[in-house]
Amino acid sequence: MSETLTEKQEAVFKFIEEYQLAHGKSPTLREMREHFDVSSDNSILKHLKALEEKGLIKKDDTPRGIKLLESIKQKLSGKSSKIPVLGFIPAGGPVLTEEYVSGWMNVGEDLAGNAKDYFVLNVTGGSMIDAGIYEGDLVVVNSKKQPRDKDIVVALVDNQNTLKRFIKKDGKVYLKAENKNYSDIYPENELVVQGVVTALIRQY
Image 1 (cartoon, one colour):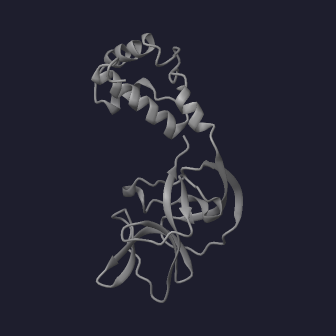
Image 2 (cartoon, rainbow, N blue to C red):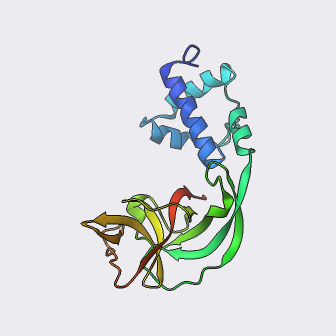
């Protein structure tokens, strides 16, 4: 590709490709302008026109008018795994919750290769916003993965569920909130890690 595209054209094409793979749709002009830190649409439009003339993209005049790339269509239509969505695990501090399957979600095998080891949780609360996890986000959790220092985990702390960062320090374990307005959690009796977060799904 580098032989047919300028460096900036290749950067724009790569951003479109990565955005489509992550979101299943194309970025808007504004999102591309903000990503490349330019003040005008004109420079982005110039690169899009060049990509279109070279047959690499197809577009119309709608905000997300760049059609899905063939390579992305193939990846998005590839094999998927169906994994359960288990209730709501709060990220605003541990509260007693009952785990139950509230639905099922199809995700790509790159996110959950062995479906029986994974589940999805819907995040509530704001204690993990500095880690980029917001209320309404969905987290993909591997129930078999062993937690490592600084992993984000779903844990049962003294019989209460929470979503926090797993910290090991001086031979002790605690859960760290990623929001200065929330306190870290030190177990009084028991801390059981129920799974390690491996992916984040955000729906707009």
